[in-house]
Image (tube, rainbow, N blue to C red; front, side, top):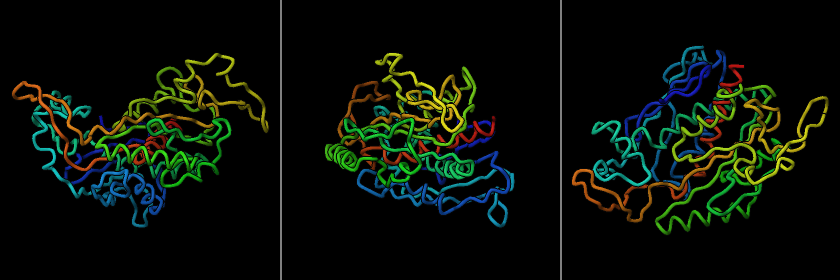
Length: 357
């Protein structure tokens, strides 16, 4: 389904090459006056056509507010509805793909489920284009979280075989997160090597994946529920809604499988009258409930499925093996533009959890 959240509900609508895309947000507190300059700046981080590692499709991504605001720009308690008009579509690039599905795209599964009615242009409702309204909603959630003393920010932890340095999970600060730039890494040399890896993939008509690490600072202890209502459960479910996400882990994640308990356990100590942990291998969550330590979420993003090399596929009409070469404008690496999307979805989920508590 296209709806995220319980108390704060975001419903996304549209298709990649439809006249518009957008979202409806329910549950925003009345009287909230968003900083629209911050919203625009946040959405610009996801927008295409800005650099060599991004698709050259041009989209202005200017949101049009349809309802939910007073005359002076404050939320009024009604659902906030917005749309973004699409432009720059090259629908002819997708002709013929209903009979020859693209590898690692949702073409085949969508055709099985929806039949000939599926809008395959640009990937239809499965396109990363629909993350633009998610970023709009997330930009509002980020502002509301900041008012509660919660900061959400992410960096590119890995591109291919190149790794960024990472701050101490137990001691990461807002000041450190504020140093992240347009290509959000802590190490300048790692960032340069990552961009080289992306360019190498682009020149080879190929693509490359990576990992985004998202932090949330200032969360109080006690948010979340055990079992199926845990913070990890809710975040993982939401983050898997981002196209191309292939894995979600917390703290040390899968590396914990190679550790001993003596190395993975986070010892408690008192600091300024509060129980904290000396380390943060757990990533700020125990038993599905926040500990008050920084929340650390790792998000694995696959290489862009659309590449310029010839690939094997099938012809669904003739029932024969064949090949295809994908045309169009595609990101050699999705990861940099996915960073604000990960921040947006994390912020929306955490704000929803806080509102439920």
